[in-house]
Each structure stands twice: as C-alpha cells, then as structure tokens.
Image (cartoon, rainbow, N blue to C red; front, top):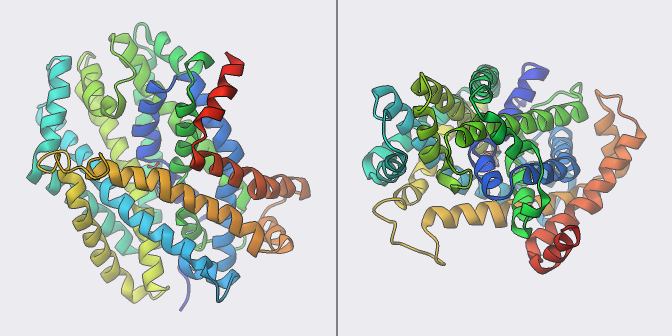
Length: 454
Ligand code: PHE
C-alpha cells in the first residue's frame, strides 16, 4: 500500500507548525509567563526550546522520514522483535487523552465566539467577565455541544486525508493566523501605556524566577512543539527524501517562538494598559482578555479576531493528535481512513465528556485531589509527554546507527558534519539528562542554583 505524501515542502512546514502552535503557545504560555516572571520566563523558555526542543524535533523527523511509516511501525523497523514500539503506542494513548480534554477548551473557544458575535460580551465589569466564564463553562449541554462541534471539525479534515485535508486546511489556517495576530499586535502595542506590558514580556527580571517556573518552562518547550508523542514522527513519515529536515525543524522552532512572542505582545500591553493583573492564571484569556478588549474601541471585533486565530491554532493541533491514531490503525490503507477518523474521533469525544463536565456537574469529583480535567492534563503534560520524550532521546542514538542518522539528515540538506555532531550529542546526552531532572523534580537543587544568581 503506498504511503500518502505532503504535496509541497511548505505544506509540511505549515502542518507541523500547525501542530506545534496551539493552546500551548496561545493559552498556556501567556498565563504561565504571567505568573512565572514575564521576560525571565520567556528567556528560559527560549533557551530550552533551542537547546532541548530543537534536537528532539529533528530526532522525531529523522525517525519518521527514514521509516516512512506510522508511529508504531516506525520504531519496529529500527528495533524488530523488541519492546521499543511501545514508544509509538505510548504516544497514541497520550494523544488520545490529550485530545479528549484539548477539545473541551476548543469548545470554550467556540462558545466565546458565539457569545461575542451575539453581543453577550459587551459592557460587563471586570468581575462580571470572570463570573460569566465560570457560568459558561459550567453549563453541561452547551459545553458538550461545542466540544462535539470542535471534534467534528477535526474529524472532517483528517478524514479527507493528508494532502486534501490536513495540508490544505493548514495552508489556509496558519497564514490566516499570522495575519489575525498582526492586526491584534498592532492594536495592542499602540495602546497608551502599552510599554509596561512590552517590558513585562521582554525585559527579564531574574529575581522573579522560581524553580517551579523553570520546570514549567521546560515542560512548555516540549508541549508547544508537540514532542514526545510521535506526532512529528507521523507527520515526517509523509515526507519525500528531498525535504531539508534541519531547515524544516529550524523553521518550525522559529515560527513557534514567534507565535509565543506575538501572543505575549497581543495580551500583556492591554492587560497593563487597563490596569489588570498579568498573573490571573488559566483564566487569563477567557476572563481577563474580554475585559481588556471591552475597553477598546471596536474591542468586540478585535476579540472575535483573537478567538478565530485561537480556534485555528487549536484545530491544527487537533488534526495532528487525531492523525497519529488514524495513521497507526489504517497502516496506509486509504480506504479505511474515513471510517477510522470518524470512529476514533467520536470515541475521543466520549472520553472527553467527564473532563468537560468537571467544570460543572462533576466539579466535586476529585481524584488525587484534582478534577478529572486537571488530572488528565497533569498526567499528559507532566508524566506521559516527558516520558515519551525521554524514551525517544534514548532510542534514536541507541537504535539507529550514527552513519544512518547522518545520511538521513544530509538528504536534501547541506548541513555539515559539525551541525550533525552538535545535534547528535545534544540529543544523546543533554536532552535525556534535562528530562530526568524535571522528572525527579529536584526542586531543592534548582532553588540553590537560582539563589546563586540572586
Ligand atoms: N503543541 C500543541 C499545543 O501547543 C499540543 C500538542 C501536543 C499537539 C502534542 C500535539 C501533540 O497546543
């Protein structure tokens, strides 16, 4: 059975960047930067993205393109008759759980879009916006319906296939996202007193850093690049040998950093200009941002603009989470794609129901002191994704020979031996060690390190 392929080089970059850009960059990044020290946090995030994220991203690309097969089969090809294909299975399970609660937030975006268009977000006080958010996400039927609509959008695109579905949609949504972002950032940085917000994001104040924010920055770097779950392996398996892998990886890193920067620039100047606090946490976008926009002329239009770009970002990530599953279960049999996308997508929706209701009727159900949504989020972001990332960084140098890796990286690219060596040793030593540090949560050690700089 012949493997599907991306139609164009740029199509792959848009699709992979689309997977990367999502709730991580637009929702999580501003609020954890807001609570974790602004500019200093941003710098640490940059550092981890370049030093650890980039090598792993390229590693996943190499595995995928060399194997030309889905996430589970790919690992089997390099290590037959071993348990290494568990990495692929782990990635699938992780994406399954991740998409189940990711779609809940996708649903919230749709609800807010609906509210903004129907005029329900006009002229409230700051507290009322907060209360409204709590009310809206507690309603069981509308949130479930919105979550279902979000999943249906993802299913329809993935069912159409790699070229006609994912690539086509990403080629429209990602450039649109940038245009919408630019409009918003221009509005935001031209507000009176926007400079305070810009400074907050760009001028590092290291005394504000805590060990926790350093760990969050590392987790964030992996999460926003969709690493550790073999999504990037799957996407790279649709690549021809002519694609320049290092260039693709670097482009995606740059795009992703740019989006985090744009998100910060779109949000913080407004937050500061209107005298609000940057450290509201997860509700920053839904409870604080509408209040910020409501103070501007034509604010509703800007807010709708923001929600649209947010929806595009979330959808292009959802495609990749569903695709890894579809790819692994159809094994290139195109006739099965449609049916699998629908069954798996709807199954994920069903799994997501408890997460959705955990903000309303199930809010009292706590497991290990966490709501179902938080438990899923914690398990995925802090356990399963770092575990997957650790295993991949061990697998690549261990199971694929150095010469094969060099050959794969050199195909379609002119990057020399030195580039290769830097990549290889970062992936072999630095990435796994850094992940283990996060795993062990050696807070005491990190705290000591930080105090040296204070
Ligand atoms: N990178 C996505 C985001 O930032 C999340 C994601 C993780 C997507 C893993 C796919 C796989 O929102």
